[in-house]
Length: 262
Image (cartoon, rainbow, N blue to C red; front, side, top):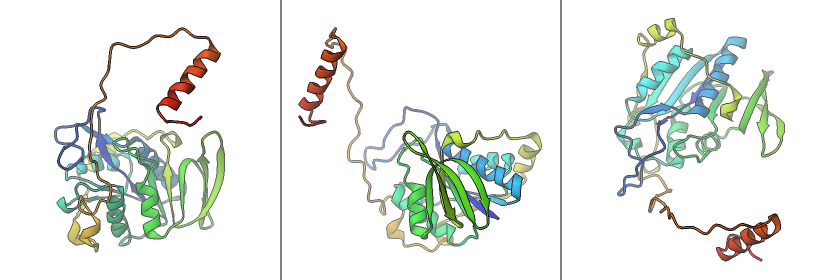
């Protein structure tokens, strides 16, 4: 069984700055981590490897320093690592990113693709579903547990707002995982040592067949037009109201700001 795990290296901070000209995140000098939802997906893949045997290939798109993240994933038990890195990919929104990932995945053998539900630097939850759509694969999002993988299908528990669904899909397919699905295992000493002896495959624009007009910043239909920091005012009105009056006050404010209609 071949499992592909899509991961992203994200900024380890809530105080990100935006490039005012390009509308993209300024990542230089910012410490990075592996996106938490993606680590849960990797752990799910490694558990399948432990229980039924599988080859786990980790894929990321990002700058060359993403290799450091891949070393950690090797130390956790991944079998292969691929970094998509090229200046032509930079500045991509979710649409352009999924175009690029899908182009790479078409060159690989796979039975299951696992992606984290969303990345903490964007919170869009779009890359996994978009990649599935472009590959023409069935998908299950918000997976909180993998119940079984057998007879050419996967059965999972999908989290909804206040309940769960048990969903089945044929393989190959794409699932996106919540961070609650599994706590990632620790790197072990032997794995860390061997991680620096392993090859990390770097792939560029020339290695995948894709139209340059649908990747990178130029191929991204989503544009950040303006960013600003909300002003905080010290002066505010303090009202002492009972429950009914407080509810009425909140309702009136929401009507005034046109969040709801009367």
